[in-house]
Image (cartoon, rainbow, N blue to C red; front, top):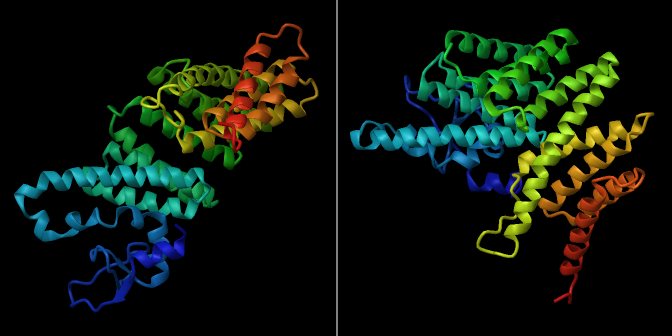
Length: 365
């Protein structure tokens, strides 16, 4: 549904508020004169902000806001628990929407979703609580995409302060904070400080998830980007190798599970990797593949490994054309190495791709 169609589902109408009961715009917090006709509890200063908010987040949460923002319901004791559940649900939806928008490169829409996530989190958890950190990190990433480094620094400073005030803060939150700080310092050219934070990110993530977790790969990749800037290419190759081996092992297991589920429709899942993760992983692996292909030493084993990862990723994701292209690249590289151990698995994947393409042809059954 495009923005125009979405907008038609929730119009705004001019409204005059009694003195002392003025409303404020959901987007800019200025005086509001328009009301959403669907939920009747959300207000805007003009239609442009309503349209922007609808596309960014309001279209997903419009009706959830009704019981939360309707004072009559909120005052009922019987509704309190239900409202608390709805508030928690609201925060999670906003967080997921903001993350999805970021991966799609829609930073302005992600910003609105993250701002609402923060407001809901403060209302639900209170100020200065560790539960606010995910929203601060989302806001920082959205502003990073909008090239507003001053706001990135402001949000990360607030997140740091909250973490310092809450020593019981979990490893997961702390590793994500260090990752965001590393990205900020990379953007400002403070590369040594960036490496310090990425090192902390990787250490904390390994403590939380284990050394073989794919969560660490994001930190390795960002650290490798810093070493590229510093011209430390052998270190880059080492980090890229760690990423490729970790994801190859993980994708191999996912592919096996995926193939086992196909004969049994009751257990079949279209893809065990969600769209957001697939988008992020595809971008990272493509960057590594391009780097290895352009490198003067042309490590065929590494090229085969990364291309095989991409082929498995897209086969699991249901795109046989991309899977076949990357599998062919992987096979060509592996065949340059006598008796390479990936040649047979790559050939097997190519056969699966060909079978899938044959089955998809009209009249194949």
